Amino acid sequence: MFSLISLLLYFAFLLSLPVAIFFFARNAGIIVRKRTHSTALGFGTAAVLIALPIAWVGLSVVEFRHSCTPPMQAYIPQWVGPQEGFLLAGDRLSTLSLQKFINVPLSDLMAHGIRYYEEPDGWQGSNNVTRRFVSSSENSKIILSKYSLVTTIEKKSWRPIFHITHKVERISDRAVIASTKDIVFGGGVIGMYLRGLGGGQDAEYLSCGYVSEQIVHWRPNDASDPSYREYQRADFQFLLKALGH
Image: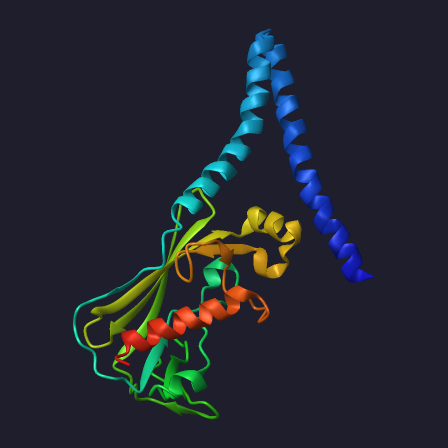
């Protein structure tokens, strides 16, 4: 019963928002018309207030689609010997209200020579890391990895578009060895409408430019979603090549 009520409230919000915008614009237009005694100015005010959110969404969609270039992974031309592991740093994208990871089963990486990855414990001033293997893990104060996987996010100031860059850096001097970019669209009110159109939770964010120039769900949790495997494949190829395998 609770889930049904939540679903009804969710769709009620999606339907009420454009209605609320319309009546807000209409009332603002009436106020302007009464104060200026100009029907044209009142109508123009209402039209602008209605057009602004439509233009915001439209311009954002156009920019996002324009950014959907073929997948491109940039590599700095310096040789990296085969690495047994790497440090996972800054790859939790909580800025987008979701926990999204580069997702490759360690067993797949192990078959190509990558045995482990390391995670900092997250406490300020702490040097402890957890070293994770296929079926075990261990705590350590020593980082064995020479290279780290770092994710950074750049958000367009007024558009629901995020540029997510994955980089492999040399830990000693932070030199970038390899990088690749993912363009993500959605979240917030836009994400709510994307979910409401039938895509479910995984449709809240869309992406392109990393796994394909086609628009797909961004790192879906549903393993039956075709882009789930596409992301694993892209992550796998990126990590192997960047770490010298």
